[in-house]
Length: 283
Image (cartoon, rainbow, N blue to C red; front, top):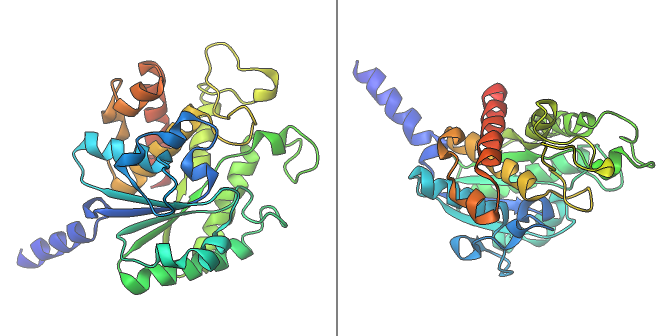
């Protein structure tokens, strides 16, 4: 009996939900470029670059406050950059003790070789080693992002003419490969697969180039590349649900960030459901 109790105590102590400090490392997909999310509640998080960004990290913090979870949230972001950039240029900001670190790479992983995880995995391994040197128990995760509509519906990319879900599926597969090749990386957060689920369920429109179908939401911004407010909201919900284990459906129709950003209660609830279903399936 005593052994069982001790084992449970160790499990609870090691749980990511018990952690207090989280760092987001990434780019415009992390800070919510092109939407009101970028400047949402910047005073609630610590921007290590001093640029006054709130972004997806601020959404995470808002969810945590509403769920009664105490998380200190920091971010280190730079637009259009991959993980190799952060490993080479942002060591001073990143080299601290963290409980959880989320690493979000470039939208195609490698700008020169789209979809190839080699450079991405090597940089993730370097960053994970840096982080775990400070805290051997740090929980490091890769964030796998969405299909870019501009690389699907326009010519010239490896995903041109393919189903909209394909790029996100390829990125998820490549991130799983990178995880296996990067000691210290624990999991992959399936944000792109949550977008796919929203589209497959008929909640979100699949092709922004022909307009948004009645009754559906748009996940992409006006450039058909970055996210819309709804798209970033779904990203933040998926990250929060996976990292904390909190059922994001409990945030409910009156969730504060959705209300602040102008999302309808119905949209908030629908996106919460999609995020949680994605997280549960991933488990």
